[in-house]
Length: 258
Image (cartoon, rainbow, N blue to C red; front, side, top):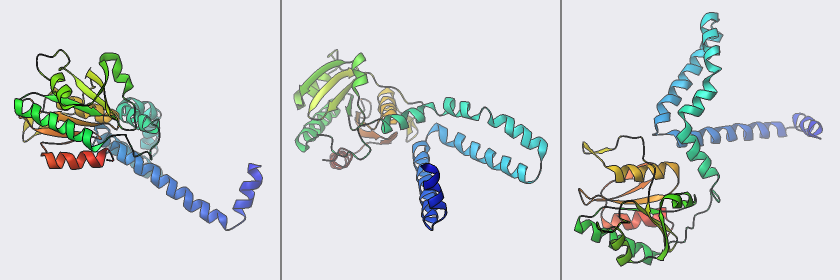
């Protein structure tokens, strides 16, 4: 069946359409591959591999047999090296592909809930308390429940403030919000390998944890700094540092599709 189909395509003008579709799909694949790796530790390594592949191609064209042999032997282990070197980026891509859907854009958050959360975060900031609040989007955060306290409680200003009060045993960790509920408290997040600095000042564990979970999932994270009292947003492995309330309201509205 495939033989007759391929024969039919190759003998009609449709083959040019399929060539075009093939090129477009390959371009889309490499575009998303670039997006996944851009601004990560794997990016510079990927550029090095591309350059090496180009040099291999040139050495074959020029007939440099010894150099070509060396490159051929090297590329026998490149696939294994890619898996080892790019493991965090590969896991990130697979988590996104394994989510409910790449096109899903509603997450169940309401404007009232976001206002309550922002009020609580600014109250904590004024009091000099740190906080870490994670919003689940497409990719499930249920794996964090193994090292957290499950609350499944209604969102309120008072509850969020009390969780991050210094004498509360739940304050050391993150709160995870799923829809209109506080799903987890005292959740421990993976830390990023990046060295985070803003204005030549090294950022602490909360910011590293916020970046870490946003690298491995599509979560959005609010961070309240205990030292500077600034409030920031982390998403997609990036940090938007020290935003005011209006900026936070707008960004959360965009990122959480409110």
